[in-house]
Length: 390
Image 1: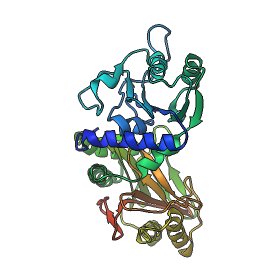
Image 2 (image 1 turned 30 degrees about the horizontal axis):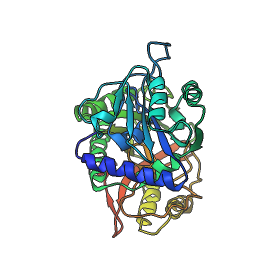
Image 3 (image 1 turned 45 degrees about the horizontal axis):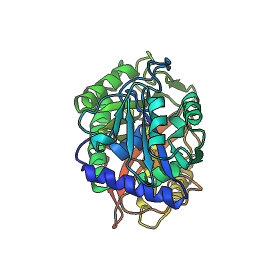
Image 4 (image 1 turned 180 degrees about the vertical axis):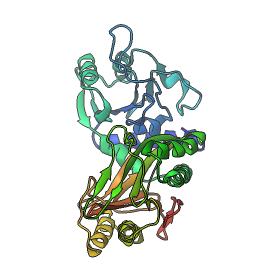
């Protein structure tokens, strides 16, 4: 929500979205986002209006409030946009004041806005349906039964895939804060420290910079004949078992600064590293770097994935884990394209890509993650965290 991006850019985004909706035969768009103090899925509304709702999600109480934590942009092909908010304007909303509706009754206000925009009998594309509660959508449908609904998420994902100069600057700032955060966490990863101690060290850096932690995928352990794995699912830093000399540690952290994401991973040994630990650490780096070196305008997302995943297999490591791709676009969330087999998206300047690999074998683990921006000449690296801790 940084004002480094001028308000006119938000208006231009809305015009491009309108044009795409019209080309698909739609009369307008209903764009939904959910914030509520979390990082649920606020990006589409923020992209169009520079608005985020910090109010937490609470169940509806008829006559008092509905759809709290949600924000909506109604974007008719012909006519003014309308932003429905549940928290007053803090001065950063990039829309004319007369286009902003502040209300506790969000659902009812969306219905009225759709009618006032002349969309009650039109075809409306829905964006952000993944964060729109079923009960809320049913209430909207019953309030404007004449609307024919269509899926339109692809419109915003297409627009968001290529970043403006202002967005790239914000992503660069976020990547740098993420880099400093993970370096602080690695410095705190010593024998006797818990995963929580490590996260706390990073939070001091991140919070002071005005950032928000999305998650910290953490694991530590020992490989070999008697492997040990230390991890926790909720919270991911919840294990009370302290780090021990001879173990490996992986940190995969993601968070947000000014609405824009960072995503970075590193590995290290606790105490002096063994050759086997280093093998896994270096394999993760080599796989990511092979994907990055394949970046060029005109290449496809799938080709980047093949380069990185092919390197992993060449090094003798099976493709497995909780994420089978090589990465994804990054911006106001996880953006297109996906660096995975089958994604034929063609790279162009302004795309910001996050490359990641977690490699496991015989109880050992290596993790590495970097962010780059596609340029006419190739790429520029945004992440600048220390690469190796051995």
